[in-house]
Image (cartoon, rainbow, N blue to C red; front, side):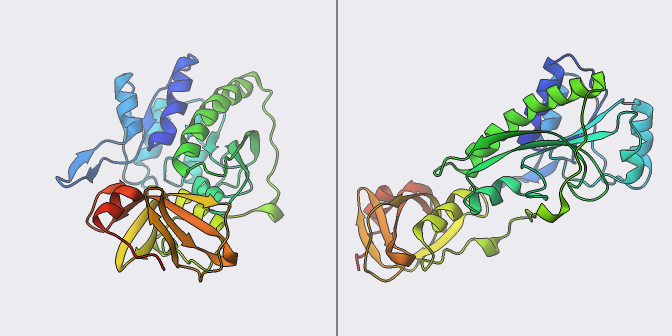
Amino acid sequence: MGTPDFAVPSLNALLDAGHEIVGVFTQPDKPKNRGMKLQPPPVKVCALEHDIPVFQPTKLRDGTALETIQGLAPELIVVAAYGRILPQEILDCPRLGCINVHSSLLPKYRGSAPIHWAILNGDQESGVTIMHMALALDAGDIIAQSVTPIDPDETVEDLHDRLAQMGAELLVETVTAIGEGSAVRTPQEEDKVTLAPMLSRALSPMDWNRPARELHNQVRGLIPWPAAVTELNGTRCKIFSTSVLEETTGKAPGAVIAADKKGLKIACGGGTVLQINELQADGGKRLKAADYLRGHPIPVE
């Protein structure tokens, strides 16, 4: 059970390891782009390439999905970014239960956006967790975890791709352990639980009173949506790439220190300086800051 790109490596890894996938559940096709043509989820595309039956129920609680699963008679259900809460009757259906590939080191960052929040909060490490599923969100017993450092300049897209591969590798190891009866169960420590709620545009506005490092984390944590946003010389811009500079300044936060071929240098809180490298003005294309400045000069304060 999975939907976006994150889940595809897990499906491929199970197939490569020789497991029989009796069916794939994914979310319904959704309209995309200007033509609003229905687009299949990445997991559906992958499943069809391997001639695996695909099921796309709009509801999981009316008994239809349960009946389908009972007919497939899986020994184990694997969930990776499916985007749906499984009711108890489905959790209870497989003989070996249901396990989930979650992109954080649980109990930290339960919820829908764990990779983003790890970046937004400036964490130095992240990882993946394989856990038994419970009715409560991401609250099941931990089976296995794998840890990776986060580079201070790494974007959420970079970390996403690495965690997807790590999750796939750890999943295969875990499924083997479950089959052998050697998988452990470690209850989560409830006093250490933190949440990773859905992203919204409320997170986008950049407050230049904050230190450059925090703003840099905001930029790399909100790619590609909703993106960090600021106003430059009266024009609203999405910011896609920044650098924290070692230099300091006495200018007020938000002041433009330099606007040249290297980019835009802006004063931040605590005398720190952030350089904008890539941006997109409303209605415009995503550009290197130097290219944007050629057509939209910004005065230095």
